[in-house]
Length: 352
Image (cartoon, rainbow, N blue to C red):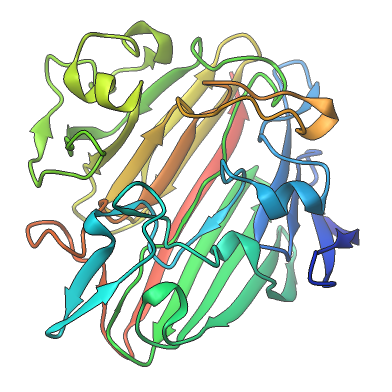
């Protein structure tokens, strides 16, 4: 195991960004930057040992300063959508930025993926970890409470990318942190992901209104194109004449994970039969947004001069359900003052 670092450019505000790369004994490499705590690249072998970068992203800091799709992004204070861009807490209504029609998406400005983080590195025999931390001040993005945040990325010799989220607030607030990496196991610059196969351990999903705000219903996936309880090709049903798919232009839905224990369990799997690469997803979060980049308009400044188009990647965003702060029947995204927000997501890579 080793870690290296090099300059990654200067932000528009004159801040010096750094690129950190962790390499394990299998040749897997993952790169991160302290600008936005973004994951910049994930390089893994295929069944023949050929190494490819399987995460969509940018070559330089300029790409991440724009980064409308959120490639590799650390997302907060509240990932996904909040209906009406507001919520009520302890009798007070908090107004948020309306950055997705009338709704709030991924917290608003400044995005957690567009600020600088303090960095600490920890080395253990079979694992290296990099911890990014900052204080999100009371009132930032419209949310109450000074929130101390750390996101820790670790690479193990078992080809696991481990993401640990930790936060504590001095006031009751809303917290829902996630990672918005776009994966393409054929290689980041290899076209669409329609031939990838997916398994999701979820009997239900949360249907939405036309602007993708959950209605509060938990709908059974049985007999619908939303059912991924057996491994299924993404492209098989993505264009089905089914209202939730029409609303989102494909998959962009929260799955209610079959994980009642609250322990870190396997919840999803992505398989690319052309390369043999497999990615397993583990988490102790209650939900996961499965997103097939339906709204990805051509991004022309990708890594290796790539142009990323619609459905070029797939996201597995572990989370509280969208709009959980406003829907009482959902697991609550309210974090009480002094309580610890403590969740884990693991992306484990292998071949078959």
